[in-house]
Length: 423
Image (cartoon, rainbow, N blue to C red; front, side, top):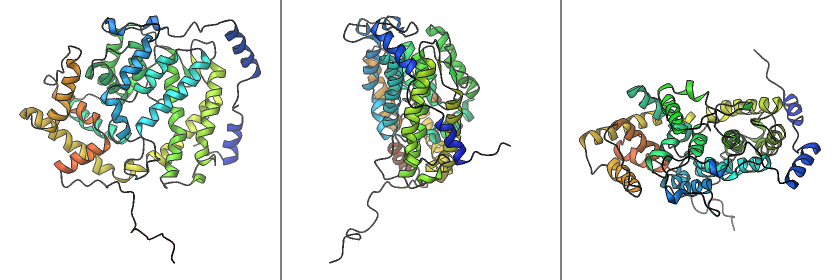
């Protein structure tokens, strides 16, 4: 077994990764821009592929194809719910902790910076960045695992948030999102890191739909080998990791679960600034002008080290994953069974009908489409539960199942005047 690195060794390896572009690359980029160079591997707006040819979706001089995707995503009800979904810490009464909505904005921002330097389509990057987590469950990855356990146990199919993001974008809201944006959402999963990101060669909805079906039937064995069809999708995928690996450390410190000195590199929350700057510069340096996105061996090793440390010190031991995993798992199981029973009874007074089916049908009606919830009740239950915010799930679970106890979010936990100065 390999001995862990000392702090000095970790910092020495980190110091070897520059935080600026080389003079040679800056000169090359400046010359390219002066000549009006365009990246030949950039995804053009004219290449956008949609399931339906709608006049309203055509690219225009002031609303290019992927800008339309961005706007479609921003106006989805599912986008609003990002603000109520956990990034890592679920029951912390601290509004400075990240929620899913901030995370997707950070991903889009980081990816746009890298994409701009590489000469890629920043509108497509933004669309993928903002839409990539729309399929996430309440309670982050803990909720994702709980929902998958119930769904897989009952059906043999797999639930992964990136695959469900495609369903939200493509099926549940009927917005005719482009193939390139859907593919980027499907392939974004930042849990599977790679040093070099090469393109899949996928080019049609027929191929894409087969891949999605394979993900549902094969789970992680398939998802771990996904590759984006565009360089823009590749940039978002690596930016997903960059966005959370440092920010989650800041949140763990802010939540009082760890001290700044708890991490091997000794940077504490400042690691977020370090990774944002150094990773961006490294990826641009090693990817400019190429038909792939890649990073140095040194950065790849550092990202893997930092992620492994986050898993050991944050994800597996903090937040709801460490504190109330059994309660959450039982709540998801009971919620699933209750919602499925309501469907089988066709109880239109139930919450799954009033708060989910009716609303989805109203959304789809605007585009002449319908929600086929009856043909696959198990999938309909998954659609509903995955759409819930943390607060909605906790309240509904408490209402249905009094034996389930979730902690209440409270901000003021001491008597008024306790800390006021004495006369």
